[in-house]
Length: 90
Length: 413
Image (tube, rainbow over all chains, first blue to last red; front, side, top):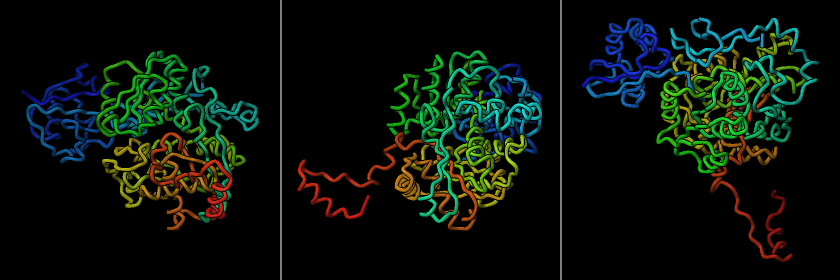
């Protein structure tokens, strides 16, 4: 079992059209940097200097990481991570 | 229409074509419609605007719809009411209410944005429209979607006021009551919008949808006699309305439809959901999301998409922000009803309550003209006043019984 990551449409160009990819446990920011090796360009699009960009929301098991431990939120096997553009709603 | 140039990322300024997209692929910043104001300048004059029917389409060159609108043809152009009785009650010189409680057809400003969004969705060839809503948007999408012949999906928090849910169901769309708050609904809808080719008005159609809000500001300037107000107080959920009202003032100025622009913009939020107000008051660069807990459910967005931009407009114009408790909101709703005969929903109470607090703190000057944006009708959420209004006088059907009560009432009412 691995970590499941849901990829939003604007990022699917770097994931070769994949809506869901898998990653390894650790922290959110490590996960992002790890994914960048398989999908170059992913990390720079959603993060900057080790911080998630302000217009990107990341959820671990449906909880916004800003209510958890932000970039350092832990993810373990079986967790679901969603990357969602912040610009929506209202 | 030749007046729209395309979409542009507000963060990194990359250009994109007019398509149902909403975020920049490179930095995830929001995309915004860009116009060719030089070409509009020669067309959209005061005389031309005055010659057109009194609806929001009289500013059509400033809206991203190319052909004839398919819905919302009678929407917009709500009254701007000079509120002298309320002005005296709260101690301000010149007060106006932009009364969107009577917007056609569903009695909130959301009819403006949905008129534009669904007309654009039709141009893109969508047959299904959808939204993530705190209630008012659901009404507008359900109603105008019906009139436009679309299949409709509206997603709302399951905890919404019962009357708001019923008012959506009346139009027989597919109503999805999501077990969670609005931010949960929004996240879910973003994921659904990824997968289904639907026009989510406030997700993939958001750049076009949001432009509809500008018409409220265009109208305010026209109705004030072609000038912008000195102060405007705007309720904030996502913050989009506030940023678009400011954009509309800038457009009116750019097109020489108003002579000068010195308006200060003030943001109003409920205390139980005040990420924008807190950022302004603490002069923070960061919008910290919250879990909402307020009776103003139409403003209960804890993670506001346009929070950064709204707080920047407030800061750059020399305005300020305030937030109001549930009781202050109810008291203000009643004050507005009692003095001006306007029954606004809780968001209207938020706007007025915050205006009063801003006057008391001196942040909002008592001199000059002030416009309060009242965005939704109180009939939609009568529950908010449960236990907060008087009971009727119960009498027998005879004169004696009536006059016995009358003698106790005195001058009241």
